Image 1 (tube, rainbow, N blue to C red):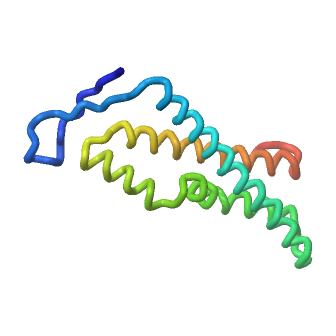
Image 2 (image 1 turned 120 degrees about the horizontal axis):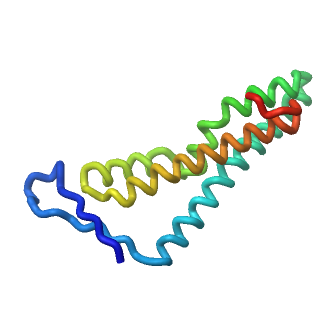
Length: 137
């Protein structure tokens, strides 16, 4: 087991420090599992939303390729929100990390956000590559 000492910065009643405990292999495997899920959920939301947006543009006689590029850019933030399960869960984790001294959850949440952003960005690059022929955004 690993221990990191995290002082109580905001809670003045407790002068002692709180130990953050990282359990072993199971917690790491759970973290990897969630990371992979968040990556592919963000990728799928952006990729699928863009493809169906292009189909809707085709049905309504709009330019589908231009519409798909526009949706690929606009859906990134929504792919991130969907992958993380809503914004309030992330805010609660940040609150617990900052005010309660639970730094493990805070660091995990930041990594999850970056992984979901990578999934959404990969989805955008895939759309650009498939329909534009290069990956220069």
